[in-house]
Length: 224
Image (cartoon, rainbow, N blue to C red; front, side, top):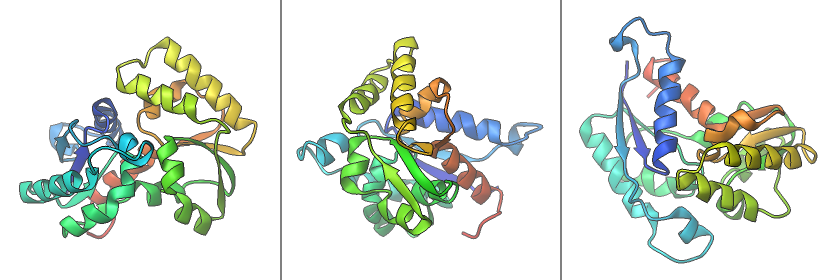
């Protein structure tokens, strides 16, 4: 097994969810069968929303770069980051480390069916075009909400610990709205990954795609 370093804390609960799904992804007979991780759970990474949507606040890039260096020094053999929005800062992460980066966007787009994909994601993902190039190459077309304020409000609610029944109801409503405009749904925010139990329509969760990529690397199914 090869150790994967996780740039986490964006948000903290989403990072824990990644770890839980990685545990379930391995048919383990004992502790040693599980995927070794080094998790840098850093909730002090500057706000991606403040930087990308509001145009203010500290640049998260240098902090993420420092985390990448820390993970490499700690013994990680590859890096992964369970935050779609933060993938806008991937060039700074790659420049800071010689380790392979398991890109959640690439892993996700490779699994999407062709056609119109309803995006359940932070407005920052739309504004920065995080998925645009990969989706265009794959023949998929992102479809965004006409008003993404409710999506952002739900993400912020989850970050504040509100992932209970009311949040699930809101998620179901958002999914229903987007399903009417698209052929398939994509959950491209790891906060919203905590609410996928509310979705009745066919969907892909980017967090699951990252789990698959991490497991494949850790088990030696992909080159380093």
